[in-house]
Image 1 (cartoon, rainbow, N blue to C red):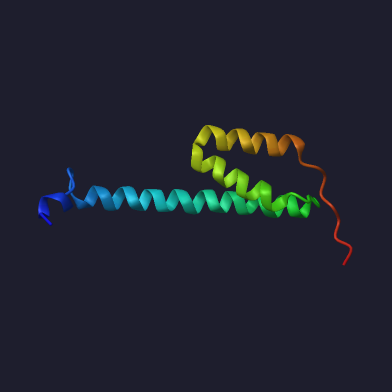
Image 2 (image 1 turned 180 degrees about the vertical axis):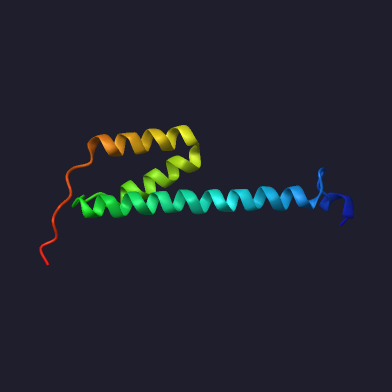
Length: 85
C-alpha cells in the first residue's frame, strides 16, 4: 500500500482537531438528550427515552433541527409530577 494514501492534505494535526471537535459535540448532544430524558421522566412522560434519543439525534442532524426539537419539547411538556415516596 503506497504511503501517500495515508497522508492528509492539511496534516494530521487538523484531522486530530476535527475528531476532537466531533467528539466534544457528540458528548454535548448526548448530555442534552440525557437532560431531556430526565426532565421528561420527572414529568411522568411515558415517552421519556424517545424524547431524549430524539432530541440528541436532532442535534446530530444539525443545530437548527435540535433547537426546533427543544422548542417543541418545551411547548408540549407537562407539569412536574410530585414523587410519592
